[in-house]
Image 1: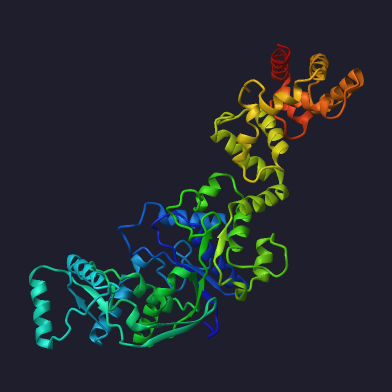
Image 2: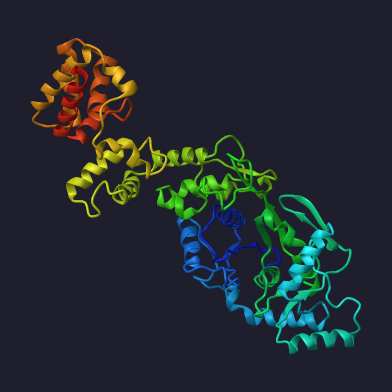
Length: 496
């Protein structure tokens, strides 16, 4: 590998489905690699076995592929730097942990969870930030060994802690935030690098993996800033060169102004949820990329290839990125308008089936009727699930006309229009939008009524809506029998 080779990674934990924030991390790393003709690697960080969920890895990879990402190395494609699951790399971590212990840079810690909790509570009571106190402080080597032997005799299993250097500054030039520094005395004391079961913790394993996999740059969320000094200490302990770090801004909710929380159920936050609603992957990719990165100029809609060509990490924002669901709908609507009809048809048809509005195995005539319906609403839909609400008039028997709609047709000309229209469509040999358009024109000529007073009574009577897509096409899809039924019901209502 050349000295200046670009190698970046996205390293999800299989503890849940693909979150918007994690998808953003993956996309930024992917674009950085592709723009610089480097390598994009997927690594699964699955050492937290208690929190891993069934199908967590599959869900992560499947949804990344849905977004249009591909990778050069990973658990599913292999590569020269594997294994690509941390759970399969234990033989790599164990001797390195032992090396630190042999060099006096790490040690066995036998403090129990109850003891640690008592320490934290006492520290809080004294107005101190909770931190780990070195349990062998002031002991001679003999006393320290005696304490360890006594703990082992009780059957206690140790964690391995890293010895944090005292009063030392760890600093780096962050690719997003600029110069960042921490004093070692502020990070909470000696930290755990191996759990009681021998599995390494995140801050140890990630350093080993990034070094062994020759990762050159690390782009990740702002919530990892506090982990970086700990990781720099481990790089230093082994004499390894650290990669360049870039910590991306937080994503905040437009409504609350607070950090996007997975517990906030008012915002859909998982890629799978947007897939289920019929969003387009290209639109999701576009929207997520704009969460903390801005292109040159005013345009915001680009293809993935264009994004790869123009990507510039110096345009990553230091300010929090606002998650705006309305903007996502606007972007997706732009993509829906430009999408080919077969893509829209396939996604929207699935939504109609899922809602029970058409059978799971529709016949040819139902598919053709659905195609016409979907095309009617294509330009209005922000995502495909909206077809069920937008087109509800075609699936639900409307109640009586009320409110503004009733006021609109409570005049002497409305019954005249409706009776003439009903009379004309009953005579049609072919009931389609072209013939229906001609019928409306004949009603205008016959009654002398035009404009809003002509077409609004027809729309309201047939669909019970004041607004909607093209009127002739809508009436064709309602069907002659139902259209006549609705007209007669409306006439009976307004004529008493």
